[in-house]
Amino acid sequence: MRFMVIVKATKDSEAGVMPSEEMLEAMAKFNEELVKAGVMLDGNGLHPSSKGARIRFSGDKRTVVDGPFAETKELIAGYWIIQVKSREEAIEWMKRCPNPYNEEGEIEIRQLFELEDFGESDAIEHHRKLGEEMAKKK
Amino acid sequence: MRFMILVKATKDTEAGILPPPDHELFKIMTDYHEELTKAGVLLDGNGLKPSSKGWRIYYSGDKRTVVDGPFTEAKELVAGYTIIQTKTREEALEWSRRFPNPSLDGREAEIEVRQLYELEDFGESQSIDRLREMDVGVLGRK
View 1 (cartoon, helix red, strand yellow):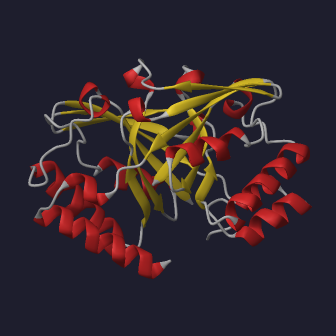
View 2 (view 1 turned 90 degrees about the vertical axis):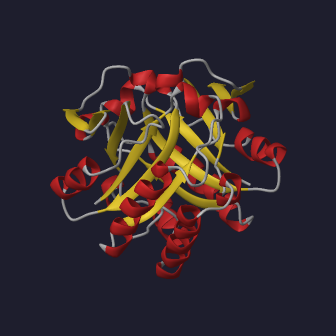
């Protein structure tokens, strides 16, 4: 089972304040454990929303809206992708995650769909082949 | 430069409604991601199960509290994402403009495009070196 761990944005992350060396060290240690246990698949931090954009769809119409976006609590500042055997294992790992915020904050953990969840069709088979192609490139 | 294209949740995604595998949306999305692959732009892409299957961990200093989903604010939730690598922000914007309307009924939807940090953005330190050696995600992939 794969899970996405979402780190929410804060005023600091939206202001582009970089993490302290202490925080980076705590995260490096935690990530190292994840890597050694074969749990970590990916992890990244996002630039502030001021460097981003949104695209609104209405039928075939598209409207581009440049950042920044005001509702900080709804924004994402970073994520991990982890692979574990059970939901409980994912909870156990992430409870050990260093507090990624200076004071209070929240992370959200969500299960990823696997291709098998969608049933079979030409399009799904096409997706599977794309996945295999991408895996080869890595 | 790497960018994350975030697909926002809707009532449908939060209800766990999956389109049938022969739904037009699958074909359109597959065609688009195939173009990304052919152009060497696609790095990753996934769909998230409804928040009812997820949980949140609330931090206050060293304290942690686990809160089970579902979470009510559908508009704030993420339903899926695609990670792309391009030479410029403009190129990323062009690709994202061609992203298919991800809604099931083809009506209203919104995606958000955000640049990812690269390790170089953080400066140099022992921790950054350790992250680089792990070679996962921000942890050093080029």
